[in-house]
Image (cartoon, rainbow, N blue to C red; front, side, top):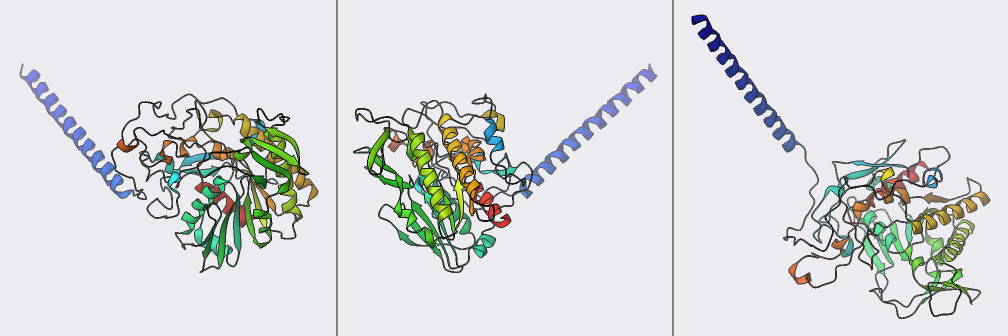
Length: 435
């Protein structure tokens, strides 16, 4: 009996020692975790702390656990952007970036209200912590100091529609970490603008030309049309062509304005239209006009005596789901897609196919050492970021009480700032420094 009691005492002592050890181990792990969390610091993002009112009319926020939109990526997305055997900067993945953006909405003052997602009340911030990683090489982060030194005594222009304006604002925000640009010009609608960086004698411009071709547009600032657009496919818009000789570097692109209703002219005669019911004009489709305009644009650039280093940017995909911008479509995803989780839309595929074919055609007529126009193929990397758009946060506090009865408009085409479009500048700078 004494031996039995002795064994029980020993077992209890061993159990007590084990419990004490386990408690000490857990306390040590907790202390270590707290140490790491205090040590790791992230850039501060200014979030408006006004209370958010939930909206029962929208679907629940999407997550990366949701089923993919579609199942494949067209082969030409993979094989039409190779750069003479070098690393293809446009094929890769979005990878986690704990450093976050180099600027915030509180450190940059040139963000337009519609793209200022954090100020407008967007509650999530995960979309800020990704960077573009090409598959076969490293992509250095944009260096405003190196860029401005390269641009000393130079002029850089972005020519196109509101996506170009979006891109310029991103670049201005990044450059402001080194030098703030002074606005020295804007048109009446603030669509064409120019900034000057005195320390580097550098001029940065955005030139509003949504068609690149000559167009008569009957539309106010709110997008309300009083008549159908008249588009001259054989004439380029002199808003940008007469200034082209003054630019050392250019980013240029077509865009979604070609999806608008329009009557097409050549030699000042009507040759067709896109979506013009009741006009008794032959429907030829937007693709006919887009090919004509892209061909004329590229021929003008490559034949110009001014050999500006030119980036021809491919189409920018939108991410409207369950409808379009005017039929209830929205974008509320909070993370990027992987390559096999999304399919390029029909319109974007048509536009990009035209862009690639016209670029290849012009490339065959110019020797490699003479061609100063480069393909800036941002379509694929942009396609993978459905989470980077303003969505309902294009408006200030869309769910606030004072906005309760207002119609909520989603923007699933432009990009939040900071946001995925900042990575376009990383790619652009790498192309400049490796060309």
